[in-house]
Amino acid sequence: MEQKEIIQHRFQQAGLELTDRQTEQYAQYAKLLVEWNSVMNLTGITEFEEIVEKHFLDSVAIGFAEHVSRETNGRLIDVGSGAGFPGIPLKILFPHLKVTLLDSLNKRVNFLQEVIHSLHLEQIEAVHGRAEDLAKDLRYREQYDLCVSRAVANLSTLTEYCLPFIRKGGFFVAYKSGKVEEELQNAKKAIKVLGGAIQRKESFVLPGTEIDRSLIFMKKVEYTPKKYPRKAGLPSKQPLA
Image 1: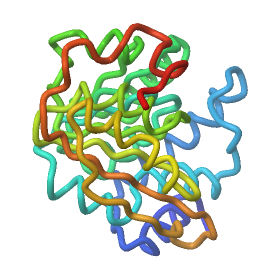
Image 2: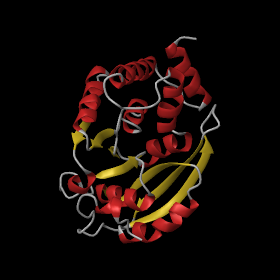
Image 3: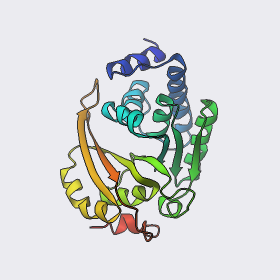
């Protein structure tokens, strides 16, 4: 089976139909990821089928795909985007989204800009900066309908990074693996202080795999107090608890 056929087949297994252009974009993205990974550390996953499974399908996970198309008016920020996950796969699947990819490492931002250019993606930008700083900038603060993050951090820390970007009534969706109950319990105070409320948790096995995933949906119900996020380093070193 050719690469494009593999992409279409795996997405169909997940109940998602792709256009030829979308299939081509995913294939080109995988190619760029492997090429750039040979000179800089973007991902430990370099086998094509694993990229499709663990990066592309994970980024557009089933119930979440429905959530994006139904409940966002269009502005999405991916905090700690890294090699572009989940922001770029979501942009390919939902071209109407206006996407900001935020990452603190300039080399990764250069890669993201190359992907945007090569895939001819529109209404998407890659921004170099720290969430603690950018969330204080009025061009970004409380400007987004949806924030997503697959970054590796505890939920309290992630919430402090992400909720300040979301408008009141918008959503933050945290991608997590394994059991999340204890993490959710520990993050309750942070979520409330920062203006959020847990809406639901969706746990599932990634289609066609044995990989357990959880998506935590938070709704922004109050404005985030101006003092948050705290200065660089504090959200990770001293999570709100």
